[in-house]
Image 1 (cartoon, rainbow, N blue to C red):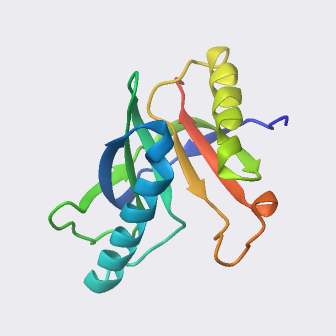
Image 2 (image 1 turned 90 degrees about the horizontal axis):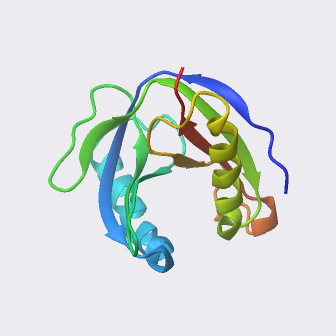
Image 3 (image 1 turned 135 degrees about the vertical axis):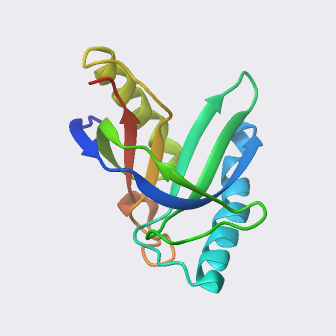
Length: 153
């Protein structure tokens, strides 16, 4: 699959999130635990959700990945216990849209890394925004995920 890469200026975005560290094979299981927890807390606390869920990959270790999973929220939200208030960073980023099952997202990340290598270099942790809700669109071939990679200016 070929990807159209675009330079995207980003504003800082407040988020509610939970963190975890797992092997690559356990990512889906962990997300199945963390995202409902954040959704539930956001609803219970009255936070205004302003976009679809995301997963940000903070550290790729030899055997495990550190990640945060959460939701963009309007200013004024507060965290509680292991649900933290943070933000997705402002600044220049490269982005692309992946269409298809989640197990193909690695190709989108690779395309962004290759593009960034000649356009200022990567400058932060990448993240995915899940534009399609699998509960509403059951066919994985139709799922859309936007992938972001912060880059140097």
